[in-house]
Length: 406
Image 1 (cartoon, rainbow, N blue to C red):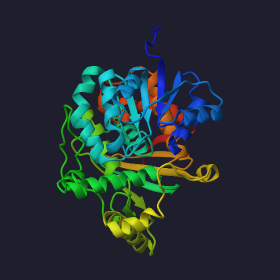
Image 2 (tube, rainbow, N blue to C red):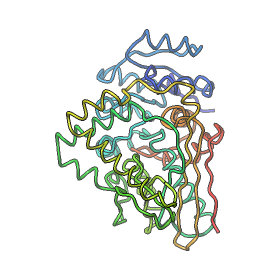
Image 3 (cartoon, rainbow, N blue to C red):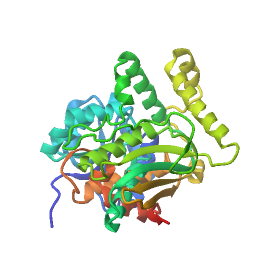
Image 4 (cartoon, one colour):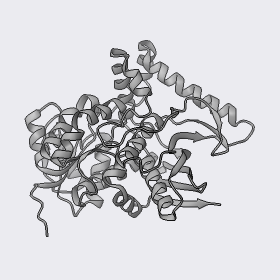
């Protein structure tokens, strides 16, 4: 039996925030085999949370800019999970500390610029230290990343070549937008306004495909920014607000696998609106609404007004509202042999809160307790945790399946 020399298996940093509390509650119920500690800025808040959960976990007080405290925190644990965003502002020193300590790390970022910076700065050093730095372990981007991985595995097992045109379709979803997600959008918009050259980075579909052996070999891929009738899905669709981030995580997974998804792999994410006579109008309306939101967030007077109504970090829906939430996505793919497959990923619970807490909690438990699936580096959920995370989520009631279409 291998004895873990670290004091903890898992440390949850930012435990008293809204999603942090949800994750802590999940760990208290489903992570009892793990040695867990809670971390954050307020000792009183951490102690109150511990009492609320009815656990005797240690509490560790530090903040995002205490370099010595973060180094000690990283060195104390096998895996560290952070809910403290925006990550471009609060995450860099913590990631650096984990890389230097050889500690696995998970977060909930949806920030392309932060992940790109993480890849460029720490990928090679993390490979040397053995640290598994795993971004996007919530609704951004576990369903997308695991779903495409399952399609690849099934097509390979069936001898049906590699993946070609692949489309994630949001079939149904109920849930709120988290304050943390909105704050990350604010931060990224501010970064682009300060340095307009970053627009090209955000527009590049392969912006995360660096710092590994594989490179981008596809061409002609771009973010969906308009309503149209999707030829593979045979229905009207609109842009999916999370696609510009999720799609880049999926492409990074492919690159980290040395383009195992295949030279014809092309990927996009959309929201389905059906195929009836009003579908084009609905799709156009959704597209216009997303455009107005981004424009409003980019212009100071309208941003001030939006800030008064959009959710703030640390806030979220009630427990009852979270319980009523759900999501169901399908990922359709045609392989190089012409075979058609559909992966389904679905779960009960608000996708940005309750379901994310499960995905995040199980991700860090796997990083803390399971043997590594890959060498270190700045990785993705499917590359770092993969089928182990699939098994863990299925045990939590998630649907993750692949079917072959006639």
